[in-house]
Length: 94
Length: 422
Image 1 (cartoon, each protein chain N blue to C red):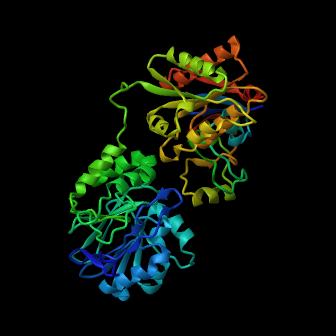
Image 2 (tube, helix red, strand yellow):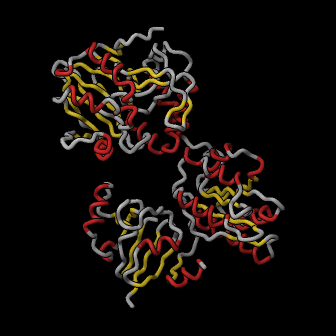
Image 3 (cartoon, each protein chain N blue to C red):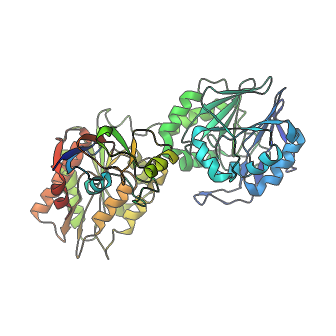
């Protein structure tokens, strides 16, 4: 099964996960300091900055795009509850 | 004292047209006021236009419009500036926009979403400004300065260049109501100024310092905040005071490269206290970390907030009683809203009799406060055995290594992570 390595920059830990895993599934388990609201891509609570590896993330859905725009998030941000890791190395600021 | 609803001249052509709220005792739930507050708004007259800077709380709109009408007609108003959109400053905005529909509204970029949430109209037009942008009123120039997070994301300051008047929003403000208005006329408001800083600006001290860098070079004759006295006597002293208040407390005591780890505990039978000692011992084995140990039972919590503000990491030990951490721990954790704790290191540990929920609950709270909690806490059933004491020492050491950056980078698999959880 394809793997992706997700590094949580502030925590100093890298997790090797199966491709397709959502960021929220990893960040919750690793104890990253993100708070979670609706978990359905609507509230914008779980906005996360992607330091590198955005090309290894799933495409933004229309809904995610809308919520990110409403929260004035830049192009390097994703909703942890929506974004899936597809492979390669990804570094997040958490 | 004069409490007549007259506009008050601040400088030629520039008037205070705000409102007095002397009976207010609680502001925004979190602040007490001993003699009320003021909602300051101002009118600046140029040769070609008139600007209104901020409005007032909706309940005081009549007073604001009465004063405004003494110094300007609505059809003369070309410009409305909102330095901060909290309802106590934007409350009268919808009515002002209705009375002066030709006026252009100027706000910061981050104020846009708040404006839309406050003014419910489909036809909302406004101009976004940032540092360096100017609006000409004819002989009077408004110069905008972006000073975000003082104390909301949207906050900005506006300078009348020709008069050296800085409309500073909540910055340099305080809740103090005195109709004599000017700092050289009103009663002693120093405590209000300090109290306001400690409760409103303190969590944002890095932003305070950034704003001061922007504002210090300006030739200021008057600082006109959105609450409390207008600071025309020695205005620079208020900038200096902010600089002192925003500066770190302990920088002379801890070496520039040393990291500070605070270990707090509270203990019924001495078991959590033993664990705290072990966490501290483990942390002390790492060079470059200054470890401090405190018993929460000795304090109502408040003095520790100052320490935590300066610290790089905190570890909190609590027994579990009736399925919860004990009250002094929650008192401490609920008092941290007045300081910045984001990205500090956090951890938890403790002894328990039945189930030991406190440790996870404290970790969740620390994460909720946006601390980093990279090392799983240690729980021990009743009296910790040697293996559990060693885990406490390991916890301390790992925390210290996180602080110094000496931690070996780890790559772990998702399945390993899941097994740690259980």
